Length: 255
Image (cartoon, rainbow, N blue to C red; front, side):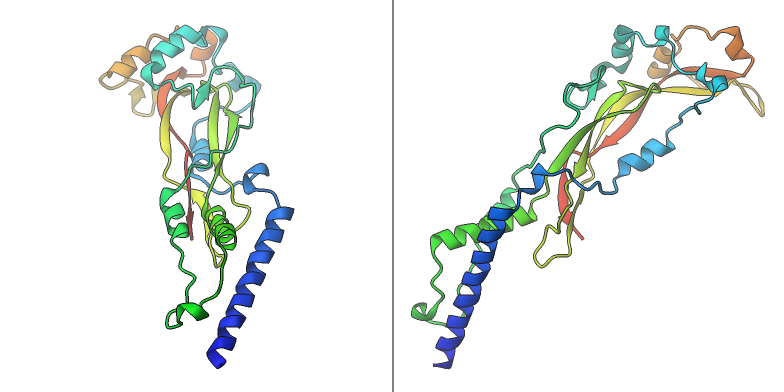
């Protein structure tokens, strides 16, 4: 009699929980319909470390000029590294893109295999859970553990080419685990290649600036037009350099 009472209490608790979940689904919107709270990623720290000239009249003359921004020439220099999925020469029409929510097949399989039976109880005393209740709870588990990615086109400024780059942010409004405690964080991500306009001193402490042995990329970079005399007096040499740039394309649930 006592075991039957415990089984009934378990069933009532489960039914109340499913009812609460159904009510919650009717009142709330999916996470991917709201703007995400930006989480810390490796991109912001790298961007801060990249060399950028201060915005002063003296240094503005070192920004790339129109002759340094010829699309055909820069495309040739960037070569196969140009990826229109992650970079754009002109401002994209849609700055905010649809959230990418890749299906985690492992998570789906684990949610579908959740066992709600109570060990030691005969089948006649097991909680009577309908397929509809089970489906609602499994869908909730999958949604809870998923980590969608929100993509945003960002303008990196004149010192980068292409200047528009697509960055990913993890939608981290709520905990992605049950019990709560874990959050969606960026995966290791991928690296794309961009061109950065870099100015370096023409003279070093140990004497005139002498570049080391030229690589293939360096030979291409030396095709920049000669700087004007007004630039020479500041002792700076500017050219486009190919650099790696990290972007987030995947998020996962972690502590």
